[in-house]
Length: 84
Image (cartoon, rainbow, N blue to C red; front, side):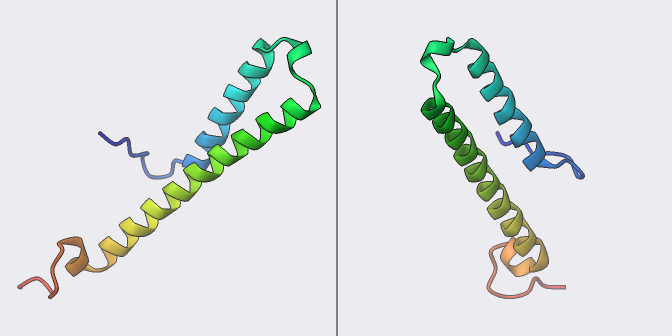
């Protein structure tokens, strides 16, 4: 099963909100003596990496969908145009 956002929904915005929410929750729940400057920087980097990977995946899917919809032969896996 694959969830597809409706038209007009900014998936990147949703990913940022989700990552930010998880980071905030983790920071709140982590004892202050376990979270120094280095740990904060590592957390920030890991969230950024995860969001970046998700955006790249989303862009690849959108590009692939656009390519398939632009060329009916590719959409149906044909080497020639469909018969009229």
